[in-house]
Length: 343
Image 1 (cartoon, rainbow, N blue to C red):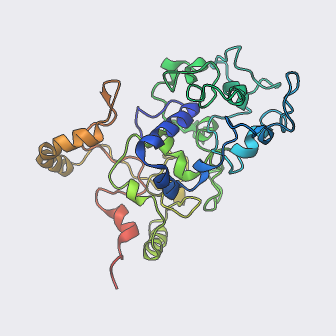
Image 2: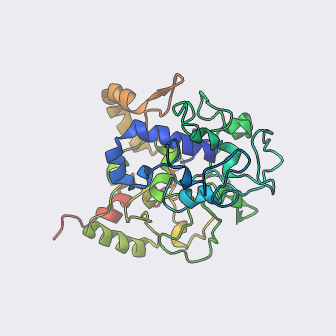
Image 3: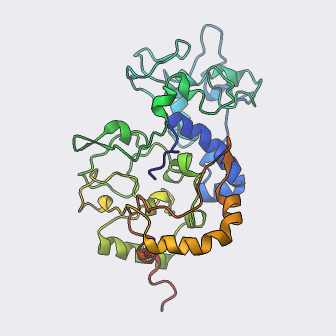
């Protein structure tokens, strides 16, 4: 996961996820994989849906919004009726963040939904394609352009939330809040599913990582069979680790990958188990040298999707990073599938 192409910050995740999902699969396939949270009825841009956000028809001097500040927005976007927004709200911008005057903050000078979203555009029923996410100052040709209205592009380039998670030996809350709604105590016992994530687990990782696919990723996003689940539970006890499932009991990225930097959790904590390679083993390099030329055309087509003339993924073996167990020696695979097919 230590990938310099990781998207810079949270607003970018929401925008890129929408584009990437449409590129990757049909709506029916996505609904099967990720549930129906992406397909709720959207009151924006729809005539006759004003009362979803307004207590009564809005007037020029009184919008009659349901709830103050972000309450109306969050009644859908944090309650399962709409996609969860990843950019934090209710925070005081640091001195390094330069908020344009036309991007309003709350009365307490904190970020709010309306800081970036001009909801009035969605009421005009015009230019939906140009203002799909009704972003202030839009439309934007580059999906990340709105992010750089507040964040310095040079400073944010290459931001990776999986690195620098520790400050003076303690978890850095700012890094935690990239994925979590609140920072959790790594010394506490955290129940399965009680991770306080900003959005559903199956959707969180693909905001950044959908454009860097790898072998086995797509077909693993499903509920494990009873025999597999039994083997997984036994392996959790044997290796003293966890294989988290998402809210629907499905395998997800974090089932195999540990997104936390070493030291966030104690080495003997189940969430602390992590395997990283410093470099690709010599045998794996030799195997690649034998097979690489034969697969060059196929790999170039499938794995080097072009954007602005640069490949998103280079063909070739890379060290295993952020794994709960090593996959290269099949320990990770056997931790789930060791006894499948055996009577």
